[in-house]
Length: 217
Image 1: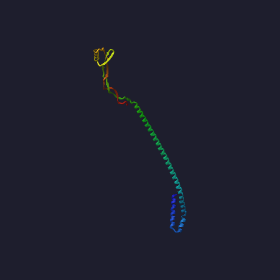
Image 2: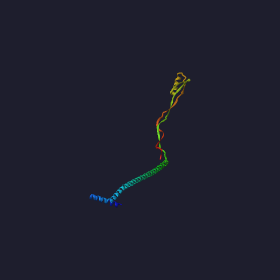
Image 3: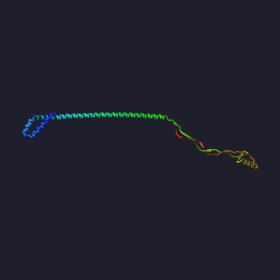
Image 4: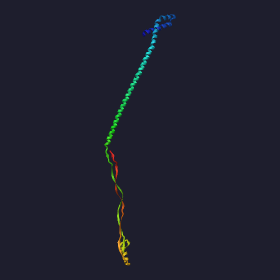
């Protein structure tokens, strides 16, 4: 088919060249002579030209469908990629949840271990020593003192007091020499005691001094 069109096209070109170079009559004659093949060639060219828009339209339609298919495939690919990303995120979340759960279990185990270790502690009593307390202490020194006091019983009347028996007797002698009745000596002396002690620095007691307070170990 293409070969026939090529031959016809060449014939048309030759006819046109002859028409341009030949006299007018000759051109008309040539045109008439070549009208049959020329008309057929022109008709074939027109038919070919008519086919071209249809073919172009078919090509455009096919291309549009191809583009739509590509877009659809692209959307499907994006949807698949999105699903894959979602699956990856879900798997990552699950993995993180598993990691958190594992870490929580480890922390719980560590706390339990610490608790068990704490229950094994023992109490260490406080350590210290006794120290002696000192203070001023009164040391007694009792002193007994006799206070002499004498009376003279002069016929029922008590004369005195006198600081000593000698003084009482001297009064009696003097009274007899002067015509008196004299009398008798009455000893009314008394004794007192007095604490004449003093203060001394002495131990008064003890108190506890803590060196190390009680604690758990």
